[in-house]
Picture 1: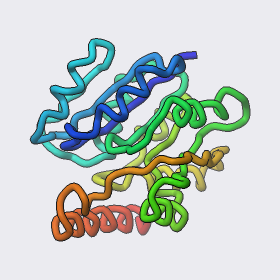
Picture 2: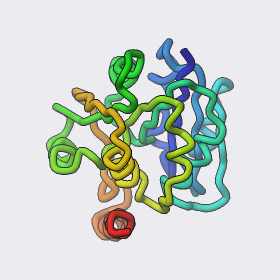
Picture 3: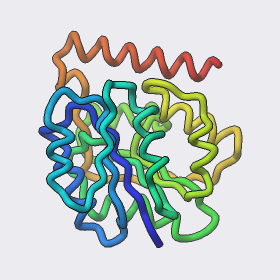
Length: 209
């Protein structure tokens, strides 16, 4: 069974190898697509160092939802895996845990929840597990997902709303000893908070539509 992994990335030159390396080592992954969302750093160049990775470069930053849509249009897997580009502690076991439930009916989508990683990210996911960016799903959902009216940072909330409205059979997968880098850590407190407010605005706007 073919499994496509899509990694949307924006200015992740320092971290993206930590995601690409375990993906390349996993025997379950048949193709990897990095969507560089208008990065200003060497994210795309680092991804192109790997001959077996497809790199899509967007000319300007459009947000995660748009990046994911570009990736979906290029993937060929029967199962599609979404992973954030800033994960810390990702292993082959985490990847396989997200995919395994989809090898059996009737599960259609899995959602990865951080556990025993860092307190701040563990807490965030316990409060709002539907905002997790670590997901895998079966190919028959692609057209519906491409058709979702999502913009900017509304991807996860759009998927959660879609799951609820269409009764998609979903399973949460606990991902131990994994975390990600917060925007406040990447950009500094002030810029990180501005970004977070923009993200929450996109989420709220989508949810209220």
